[in-house]
Amino acid sequence: MTRNTRIVMSILYWAFVLYIFVPLALMVMMGFKDSKFIGFPIRSWTLDWYMSVFENTEVMSAFGYSMLIGFSSTLVSLIVGVWIAVLLNGRGFIGKGVIFGLTLLPALIPGIISAISFRIYAQLWGIPPGTGAIIWCHAVHNVPFVVLIVSARLSTLPTSYLDAARDLGADPLIAFARVTLPYLRPALIGGGVFCMLISFDDFVRSFFLGGYQPTLPVLIFAKLRSGMSPEINAIATVVLAMTAILGIWAERSMRRLQKG
Image (cartoon, rainbow, N blue to C red; front, top):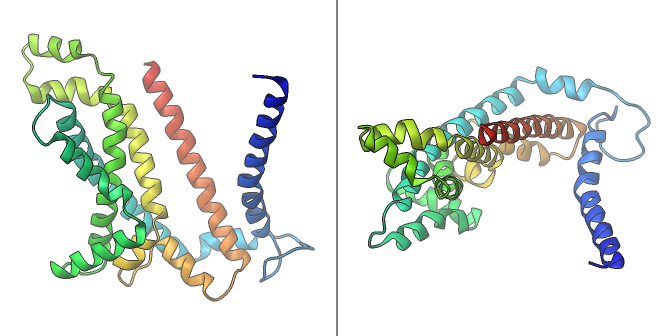
């Protein structure tokens, strides 16, 4: 690579970084503005908007509700995703490619189409809008990501580990619990965090399948309909900070487990 090429690549890289982080920085700054409206210049600064986020029972209720849905749908996604990944990683059988394609299909369908389809399906089976419907919809959408992450980890599992467990008298279930599952721990952490973030941030499916209790993205959308304010920026900043903390923890945990 020539020197001019490296310079161009460096310029493109930093331009991309600025494109990503400048809007985030502006969003955080607007949350400190001592005014009911966002915009420049910022003549005075305050922490009131950030303090009000934790004092607002409506926001905290929506946040807790989103966390409940995220944890529940992630748990379901991990259980189903690991089962499908282990099935697909086994010996070849007829229809393996079809099952793999159908498994990935929910991740490829546009969100609005998926939400409408799930709403129609829920009405067909008499499933009322609310927590159960949202968890079910989010879990189905997240399963393909778990399958891909777990399958990638399973492909690196030495077959000698399972052979040794069977030679020592372990049946397939015990071998899975004591050999395969511990080996999959980094993939489970990464897939779980990824699914949690997707579910927490999912607006379209939560909007179409939700009941009277809104998730945090739906609540923010409702607040946006009355106009932008520093309160929305403060809420978004708090969520961004928690997301960053969760992502850093997951990344460090995966590195530590892989080294171990």
